[in-house]
Length: 313
Image (tube, rainbow, N blue to C red; front, side, top):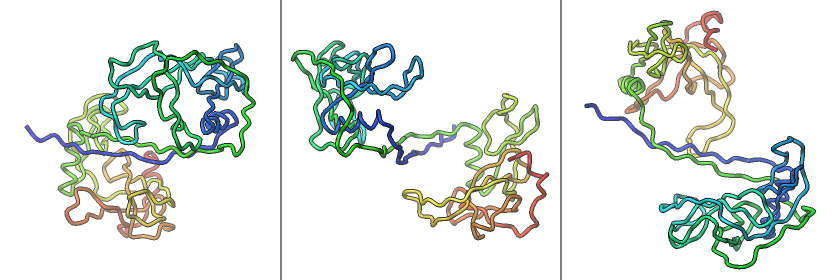
């Protein structure tokens, strides 16, 4: 039995967004140790707040301060915290309905073990020592035996309000290709490009997916394509990616390899970025020891006629 291919992959980027008046008040309030919700048209108090009524879709701005105490409505134990999670010791993910609110807030509960957590238990906010106007200003929840708090109107006004946030997004996973893509990757290691032909529509797909995306039938017939191809469309990248040793600007393009009915994407090199164009004929460039092309460069052939690739745009 052949070895199963696998590789660790990470998708990571900073997500930047501006804040409207409701979200701005909520996050600024956390910085000031104040938890705000919003009252809907039917009188329910939502925490975290939203800017539009989920039932009527009307804009809502009636802010309400709720208590920093509440009740656990459901929970799940996390025995192995991951990088950048709120606590570095085992904890419980909890939904907490704060006193005065009608909905629950997702956060973490600092508890010695799962036996110490239960639905219905009373908890309170443990504030972070340093607060900047983010959900992490709530360091966690902790068990609490005091009296319930109350809700009160709030004007949402704070000095130096938070108007925008940057949230790091990261996804770590292990990718294991199936039969078709394993064959494709193994062919690339031999400096060949292999696709699969649909037995129904006869189109050749590269990279192969193991099934025709149009007909929905399995594909098993392998077809070698390229290695040359045609640029069908492209974009100029002007923002340097983290951990990518590549100077900007550069061009990323969709390339229809000769004999393929699906364009793949790759970087274009060997030509100034402002001279890349639709119809440009290109070929792969391999580096020593690489299992895939480093980039594609012009072949010097005349540009392909638009009718030859218009169906692949």
